[in-house]
Length: 119
Image (cartoon, rainbow, N blue to C red; front, side, top):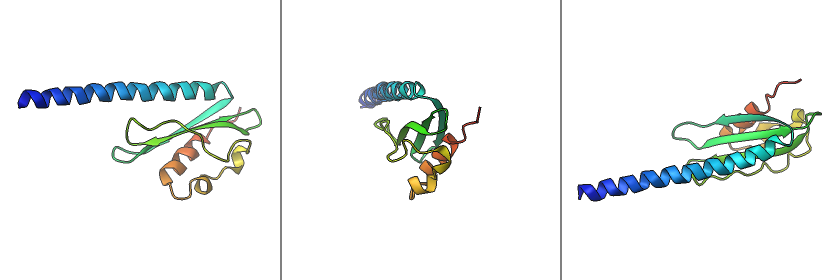
């Protein structure tokens, strides 16, 4: 009985490592693609028992949004996506509370991503 529990725990741990690596690989591919499009600001929020949110925003030389990366989740099955409706807008036009009206974690992550330094 104990050896069966240990075996299940080891299999679950190995699955967690494999799926976590797969998630990191997908995120890194999406992030590399984003970095090729302009200057990138990154914001992250979340806690130990809350969904983690990662937002990255690529801006051109005129501070207009070229592309975005948005990832939110608690599990290794969270996938990188985009933020709808922000491409082409100027950084100063973006209001995190309007883009994510009912999601304070995403609002915070977007606010941090937009604090890209000028220059």
